[in-house]
Length: 182
Image (cartoon, rainbow, N blue to C red; front, side, top):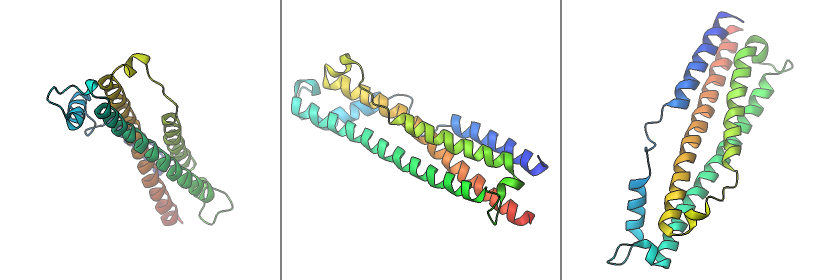
């Protein structure tokens, strides 16, 4: 392994650690979101969404649409990762005109690992989750449980986006390094 590959691998590992741990935009909890959402659908003076099935149903449907949007994002990331992984596979063959694997085997394997990790996280997001029976007893509890689920999924979706972008940037650097090296 050459000097470039060693520096690339170290920087890629450091960037991956940073990308997996830095989350400035995801809230610490969902209490404020829960209050804002239920206030939006509470149409009575008593302010208790659990006492009004039509308002509670509308609020729960809205929160469920957030989960659906997250799954759509995960599906898009999975497709993107598949395309990028296929591209890396094509240019990392000995018969390719631009053979980056021969010149930079370890970085190529690391980038493929990042894409595979991102894809695995996306597949994990598709697992069916029923939740606890107690969470379905009131609209407020169901909303809180679903918001907590969307918060957890937001962490993972953000991680997959960062891994995918990091992989794409790494591939661009490797292609440039391979072209310049020849």
